Image 1: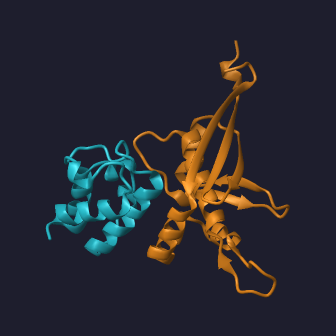
Image 2 (image 1 turned 180 degrees about the vertical axis):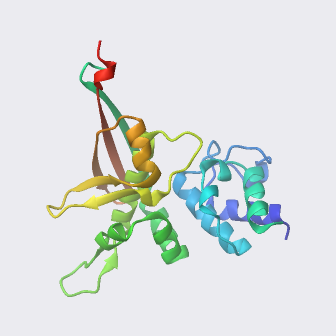
Image 3 (image 1 turned 90 degrees about the horizontal axis):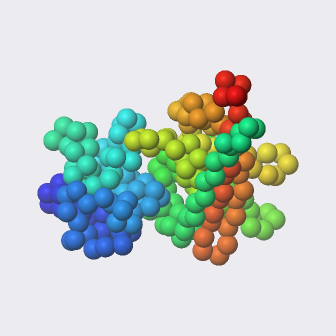
Length: 81
Length: 143
């Protein structure tokens, strides 16, 4: 499974979006698509499980989780991918 | 702003089922990334005398709502505060107050917020909190 596929799987299960994950572009604002702050915490923890790492403190910002592209950048930066 | 100061208000609602799901799914990782040891301790209670203590997810949900409501009062730009720097502290009298630390405390100072007051509530499915921040007028603003 690719990084993008894993991210979208996590979003489908935890983000509680008001729209189908399939409709998201790389840059769709996830908070605008219905993800609450509490759901973003679940997304963060589920991503850590899926990729077996822990987001560093400096990346725990709203912008890290605002879109598929932003999450991908954060995952790749943290895992060195 | 009035001559005496200004108010900021934050309000948030959280689904109690969502918090219960997070506790179930992520356990201590969820609890320790979001809540302070004091908050976790004050959310443990027995439903009956002599029964083992359990986590009250409705109280946890109310605390999460309070943290988000404080965020709305502090208005951080382009950043997400560490949730644990905003603590709902239960006093000996039983009511709750907000205690800030780290970056959250710095933001409050920058915004001139002198006092925060919180009210928590929860019903069958939803927990909520309202937070009011009081910014007293500074002498340099007078005139």
